[in-house]
View 1: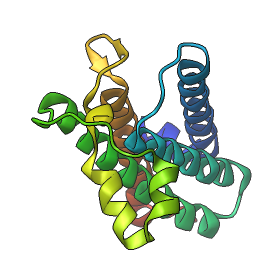
View 2: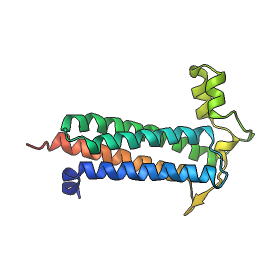
View 3: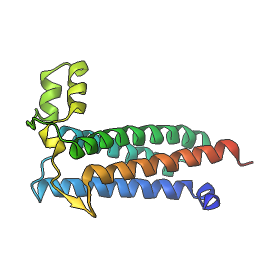
View 4: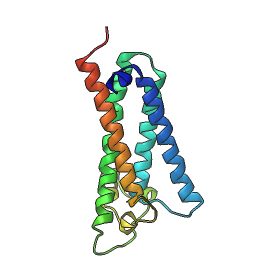
Length: 169
């Protein structure tokens, strides 16, 4: 498997970008066709997915190893951030707050408060973030996003590790 990965970094990155965009499209489908409004943490995860997709596209479009290495670090960082947000939301879903009140929406927080105050409010979550409106094979959207982000992060770190330990000549 590692030999294939060493030769096919651009293909793997293209696959990551395609799956990330499909996940974003599915989220938009759930929002606009099924009426599931995203909570603030869901929106942050969407931005993380978009970041992962753009960076993965950059990797797949670039043939330069140095560009790919920098982009792989950015990909692992973006996926790690997305995994953190998805894990926090999963935690809120498994252990909902005692008072489940709907907080302000994401844009309302950004417009009404300074960024230094709005960002902690986003990660605090709300009753909306603890709700499980859709599930597949027992996992919520946040659970599946966590699995995806972790997979992308592990893959990016594996490629980096292989390139640092076994550089091509």
